Each structure stands twice: as C-alpha cells, then as structure tokens.
Length: 460
Image (cartoon, rainbow, N blue to C red; front, side, top):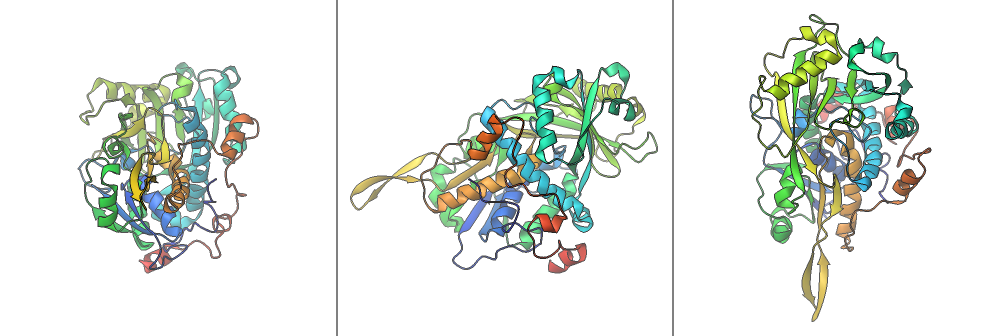
C-alpha cells in the first residue's frame, strides 16, 4: 500500500523535505510534463537525487505548447468531462489518485502567496445534466461518491441552471456544484519547473528513442540512475513498447473574459461526456485566469495532426455549442494573440498505467540462471486528466520506486485494500490518506507555515 503522500514526506517549501546524501539513490525521470514534474517533486521530497530528461519543456511563444499547457486543467472526479474511463481498475484507482491531488492543489490555492506563484485557484465548478440525476444510476452513484469524498462546497440545486444563465432550450434539468482547483497551466508549468530545480532536480534536454527496457542498463549508467521513471505520455508507444497508446486530439477556444463584452464568467460550467452520452463533442467552459475563458471541447481519438483552424467545422460547432448553452458568449471576443489551443492527450486503451516494467532479464549468477526484475517504473496514459491525477499517480510511483530499489519482483497493476473497499462500499467511499481540511500548512503535516512569495524567491 502506498506510503502517505500528504504528511511527513511532502512539502510545499522550495527545498526538499528530506535532503539526499551522497549515498541516496538517484532517479531518472523521463518526461517534462505535469506528470513528470509532480513525480519528480514527490521523489525529491523523499530524499532521492532526481534528474529529469525531456525532449522539450514548457514554452511561452507562438510555437506549439506542451500538452500539459494546452490542457483545460479543471480538476474533476472521474470519469472526466473529456471522455469516459473504459477500464474498471483504472477508474477505481483514479478516484483515489484524484482526491490526493485535490488536497494538494487545494493546499497550494489556500495560501495566497503560493496561489499567486503557481496560478492555482479554487473556484466553483458546476455540472449540468439532461435528466434528473437519480434517473441515471451512474451519475447518481458518482454524485454520492463526490459528496462523501471530501470535496469542498458540494451543492446540488437545479436552480443553478437559471443562476448561471444557461439557456433553457439546451435541455439541462439538473445540476450540482463544488469547489475545484482550476489551474493556469502556463503559469503552473513554469512554477513547477522552478520548484523542482530549487528542490535539487537537474534538468536536461535530450530525446530518447527506442524501448527503454532494451537500453535500461545503458541509460542508467549514462545518467548514474538507480531507477528510471517513464512519464512520457504519448511517447510511451515507443519508450514502453505499448501499442495500446493513442492520441486523443483536443482543442479549446480562448476568449477575453474581462467583463466588457459579457458578464465575467468566474465559474466552470460543463456537461460531462458521460452525462451527455457523447465522448467527442461536449460543453466545457472554464476560466483559465482572471482575463481568459476557455471554450470547448472535443476529443478525437487517433487524430495525430495539429492542423485545426478557427474555420474548421468541428471548431465552429464547438463555439456554437457553447453559445447555445450560454447565450451571453455570442458577444465574446477571441484572444487576439492565442485564439485556438490544440494538443494531443496521451490516451491508452486500458487508461492509466502506473506500474513497474513487467519484463525481466535472464542473468547468470554463481552458475545458476535467474530472472532479474527491471528497475523501470511507468506512469502514463492519463489522457485529459494529467493535472487531476498528478500527485496521486506520483505517490504510487514513489512506492514502486522503493520496490524497484529492493529488486522485488514486479507485479501487474491491481487494486489495493482501500481501493477494493471503495469499489464495494459505494455509499461510504474512503479517500486514501485523507486528513481533515485545515489550514494548508497544518493539513500537510508541516512544522512551519507555507513559504511566502518573498521566501520562495529568496531561496532561489
């Protein structure tokens, strides 16, 4: 079972919770997106030396941005708005992972200085449904789980439809809302890169080709690594030899949300894919920051090109769908500098994989033949939920790294005891390592308050 992520082995400070020694193990993290950076954060706080290698990093120019930057980054309880989970085990694990991430993003957002540094805010997130929730058993069960999960500010009320000026002609008849982390991804990616470096990570720009398993010993020797963590998203097709990975193309319109053309939207508004019974074209309206609103969305399986334009029919339908849902958006102005964001979500047929490499090597030891386990740990396939699952997946990766260092035999992904309890006891879902919602520094088990912006910058 994973060791606690929130508590004595995790810190919001820009220095590691536990400083490594010369003899501390070294971990190579391959991948510079949100999964790779949050995994590095967790490993650094546990006292490991960490090196991160990526072919590219977050950018802030006209060039194509990372998928982690393109993401809508609205925290959601799974299954998420951009598509349904198809694998039951991954779904159950994702419920635990997302709640761990919720508490950490909430802790960051609840400290004004950290919120400003990271671009993370807690805002109201409202979900609408085309039928009374009790009439849809999956949605009713999901609502019960959300209410008991520890999510703050849950409120179910059909009058939210009128409160948020949703068109009565769109067909929404029920709704609920709760507080959720919403993340300015450009801002947050820059912050995460600075943070992990301040905690001791070394960053290198390099492209690795081929199956990691086939070159494991060479890579470990080259980077002086005891364990390799694969957090490469879509590149896992090549680096993990996983042919079940595929791109899930998405796109979002960016409009000016300054209150001049329409009343400012400060709440996320969505009809989830599972509620609308459509995984491809949905309503997804999310504040990115104080002046930008995202309109979406689409999910196009196995579309690998990034050639969409504002005049493509699917993009025009996306805008009209959002305007039909929220009529005041008909006056919205596109962001003149960056009107259309598009990217490839790293999807996988069996959804998320957080697992050690299962292939083994045959070695000769004292005249006998033995099977040697790999020291590669995988974390990919998060699809459009990378930010929502981030720290939860990272905590499990840390557990698997510990196992790999002990050269224990690798085991296929399975539900642990708490996840089994969650799947059986539907009316009392348990959140792994949950703690009472207190002041951020207290609920993270920190001896000192979270650092101010001045302290953060001074440390750098």
